[in-house]
Length: 80
Image 1 (tube, one colour):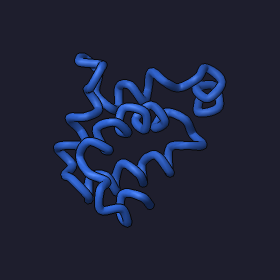
Image 2: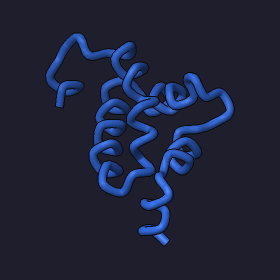
Image 3: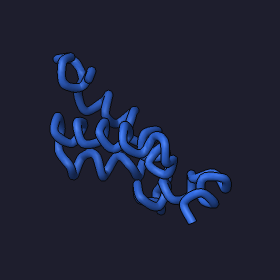
């Protein structure tokens, strides 16, 4: 993964990626790879930093709240 092998991959890269990846946590097909990427980001920076980035652009919504809101109705129907 790029975050593990690239020396210039730092906090700014994580800050740009986390909001988009957190939206993918609500999609059944993308949940695992998005979660793995977020875990790698937390190892590279810190868990607190990753969790704080999830609120950029959405001040009242946490990462998990946005993940739950981003699920398409067809995916919600499959999960029920």
